Image (cartoon, rainbow, N blue to C red; front, side):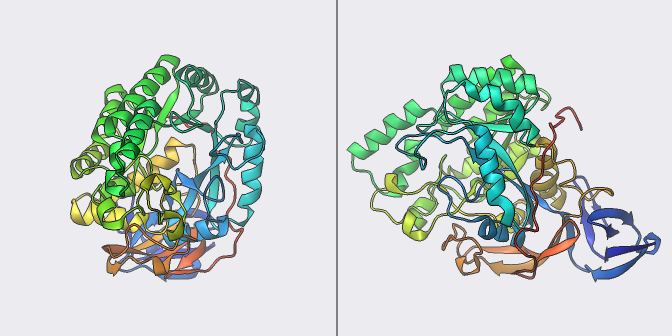
Length: 460
């Protein structure tokens, strides 16, 4: 027997340990792991001496070629491939009408799923979708089974903006989420508090971005999370809190998370590595919602990641240009920042080199946990029989991040000038290289839509 590829002499990083083993790949899957002498002969042998061999990163929170995101699938997923991300979950937005909408008429959730699948045909990485519910229309419940049949086993809701849903409707959605055994993904900020504070800042003329965090405080994030998690638990629904930014909001998840089986949460790389001083240094470039917080919140987020109240690190990637961000008043800025290309090296450097966590901690947060949480049964692991999504990572190479390297349409980086140690050298998707030494080496469209299963949150 001959296999397609053997990667030898590297250090394999699993969720719980490091292994000095070789890995064999055949027909797009991991065929075996072990001493190279015990593995089959290979058509190609890669010497990974000095490198870590990681599972491909699974990013469950990205915005690509959709509502207000400038990146095409080709641009966004090229950035992802260069950053060691081999799978992502994008959003299928139920079309609505309003001041913030890009649509002229309302549409269904199922139409949104079909629209995003069509757009994704030029993806370089594998992708899936969350269905975003933007209107209080009970008709969405009639199409939910069809959406699930399309392989979309999670729905997103907001408590803020003009697409924010009332607690009554969110509670109703939770009923159906529980009945269908899928996942509810929540953006939680109390809209009335945020709107009042923003109006006050405007009236006071506090237009510099340094004032922005005051408009969306940590307690507004925490109080909305409290209500949402309580409703989810009453209905028996799986709850996932996205982009958790603060100690107060993470504490809420921790209080309700008796065993982790019904309540989970993520934070994002930027919230663990940047704080609110970035608004003084970068003006409006890092404006996102919720805002960057304090150094104390950063410390708390790492504690909650380690202890389990939070279990995933994502990007919330959203591509804009510097022109979109260069405004006189912070409230006129686009919200969001790109991060797919830099997330793994930035988080690895912060977690491992600066805070002393293990490489296995990074793999748990960015690979294994998001895959298990969202039903990517063949992703986020180096186990034989699963997809050969593999990253070769140099833990010793230092470099300075610059937007000049961006594959994303974004022409800036919120990490500009940051020196990190740890660099993606090569990314494989289903056994084929898609990025190599800073260059894309696969054709657009190699990535595929992944129909996700209903996740088993009782699994270890």
